[in-house]
Length: 212
Image 1: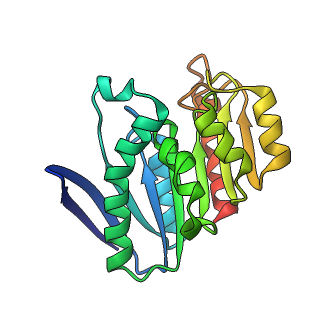
Image 2: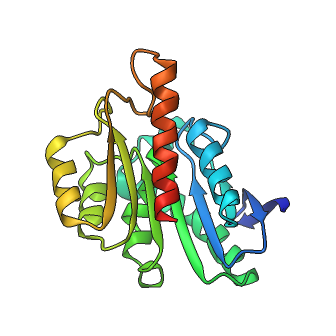
């Protein structure tokens, strides 16, 4: 396994990413949440799961100030895609990858739903969405009409959880939908139930394994 920390310079901006290489023909691009980075449980164990399955990984290290995060979904998606697209194109151009997987949490699901799911070159890519921002039509609508295979996980205590939306996604998409009972936006079980949170995380990782 080879781990390299790299930088790309684009329009006067430095975009950092970590590339974990195992010599695979499949690569998983991961997009972190706001304040939920790659050392947090969902990403740490998802990364471990990819390594276990001999899948290369890219962690993109973007960060945005509070003013940027208050922009509309469309504006924020455009800003994020300027960073993400540079990394994706660089990695795919320099690699010999046949399959792609996209995994994002919360903020990181915005470019997946609002752009990557709509692109012809990624129609066969698997999508993993942790706690997507489904209360926004710009996120929910593309996911609903998508034919991608993959996984969507959300807690029923998440402010973006809506039972009607989840029922539609379950019936009308190819995604495996997992609703974690009593889980918040971090997919931790409230109120601070450690054992149940660990059990929920274990079940989520089994679902990740099933779609790989």
